[in-house]
Each structure stands twice: as C-alpha cells, then as structure tokens.
Length: 110
Image 1: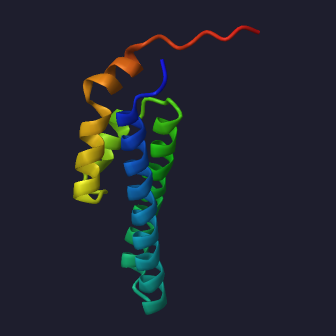
Image 2: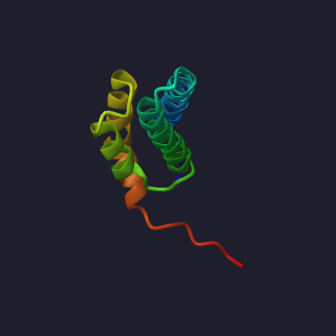
C-alpha cells in the first residue's frame, strides 16, 4: 500500500516547520552572540538544535519512520509554528495514516 497523502502532507508540514524554526532560532542565536548576550545565544542555539531535530524527524516520517510521538511532544513544548503544527498533528493521526503505520513492514526478497 502506498504512503497516504495525509501522511506525506504531515511530513512536509513538519519539514517546513523545522526549516523555518532553524532559520529563525539560528539567526536569533547569531544576533545574541554578536550582541554579547551569552545566555540568550546559548538558549537560541539549543532551540536551533531542537528545530533541526524537528526537521530530521519530519524527513524520517516522510520515509516511513513512525516519529509521530516525538514530533507531537516537541510541538507541545512550544517548539513549533502553531497553525502548521496543528495541521501536521491532525494529518499524521487521521485513520489512513494510522492504518499505514499499523501495517507490517513489506518483506523484501534477497
């Protein structure tokens, strides 16, 4: 069974969210570093790493890894753009997406 469109859309939304947050937090870290605000630079750097994790988990979701729980938890701690994250969460848990993850992995012949 091919990957459902809802799951593909959710993965794309997670990737977009990760990219936007990476750029946003990364530029905030750079600005704070250049202004000499070490604490803010450190916090923004940690958030940049978390945004890259969202980006990578979204890519994994697109390729069949069940990263839904990790992505949902990261979004609940405030590391997301609310409209994109809300849509992605809904799309990754609709019945078609849940059924796709519930299927046993396809067997490959050597």
